[in-house]
Image (cartoon, rainbow, N blue to C red; front, side, top):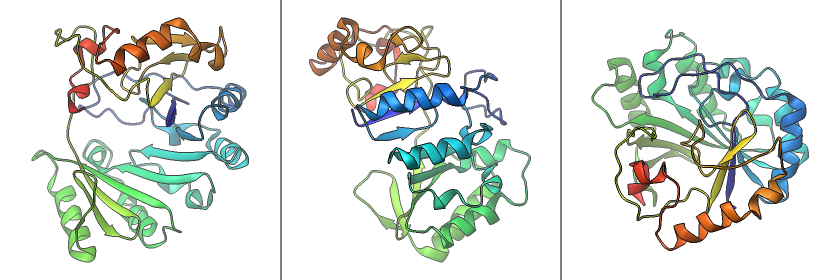
Length: 268
């Protein structure tokens, strides 16, 4: 297992049109998070603290980061960036390996004047942490965002990397032009029962209610493989349901119904 997504909350302070699911107001308790992280550690060191929600909203975020430091976990934190000003010492946490900021969310925020100043400060004082600035490849970006992107390129230059659509601005600071995608739904039309994905093979997702699914694009979840409130992660990963699904994926056979309707997997 390369990484595990842990949805500490499904709440978000924004309502971006490209995020097609209704947000909730559920927050994992710190005791649940501590339990789940302990179970994850046995299988994987790399953790993402989101599926659908904005992780910086969680009231126990500092305690969670301290716990990840203690467990020597590696964290990728994905955020819309609007609440980064609340955490001036975020980069000091040992666990943080990569901070990804979805700047395309700015156009759907209240346009706080601190937004770009905070990001500029993070770039200049990155403390050897990787920072990824995400922009959707879309003509719908506001002039403000397009101008900010142009300023970054002017100030730092743009250097290609081995990763498609990812460019180096300076050491460990990346600009990523992200392709827009549709969140898969069971109501989507059937595409094919043949294909593969990284979901389940390289990663699993634990939703705010403890339900475990194959991937981070399944917040319902539809591709349910277990429930941590009923069984342990070790039991789930040894289950017939999970292992049959993985074996089928390796043979390019899609067992889960949502997978048969997902357009994101076509990238693989």
